[in-house]
Image 1 (cartoon, helix red, strand yellow):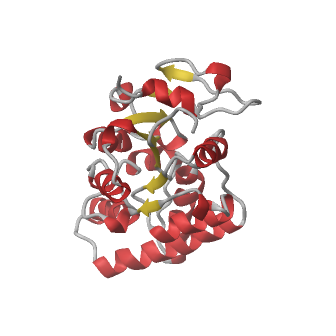
Image 2 (cartoon, rainbow, N blue to C red; image 1 turned 90 degrees about the vertical axis):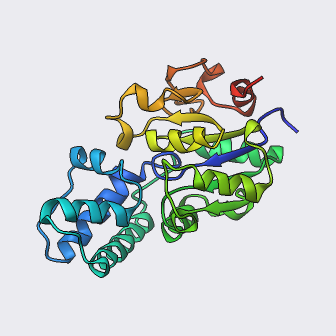
Image 3 (cartoon, rainbow, N blue to C red; image 1 turned 135 degrees about the vertical axis):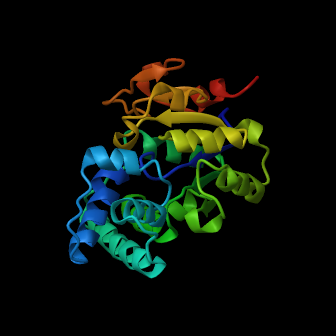
Length: 252
């Protein structure tokens, strides 16, 4: 086995793919238009809203703010279901793709026999749609998924990561979490994980303090033709995150 961490735990939105700005935001706006609502979440607004984990929670918070009253849960659910339908359609149309280096690292870990898991606040249907399209053999890559509906509290709470570690029967010390947001870093580090951050479009406005606990902050995981940029932390040989590079980030 190649020297490396004991497992990789992958966030989805913003980490595997730039799903937030190019996928979920667009799908929310389609759902609003379909419901006869005049709201349109532009990029700047969505970069603020995305700090609220979960689609239903995001809709509820926005409705409460613009209408001044707590929203009807059934109305929130209708909007969320419409948004999911539009998101699935965007995925099927090929509007989204994996970020640089993601598939390379997933396959390297699989070949090395390292367990991998999905740990996300996103819903299971959204994860299913994305992985079926972008990584068709995902069942052979990921030992388990922990999604938003599997835990009582979403990121930045560490519940999802704690559940993943329990199901994998692994201690946190040798496990790497791959994240893109401050909420993700907070959740992973609270669970005792070493965290690698690849900044995304949706987390672009978050200040450096949001990522202070991460072991390294990168532009992306890197490909031979598209080497990554290191914003903070040790440089990657050849501009690509590898299993041996991840091993160096773990506590001694």
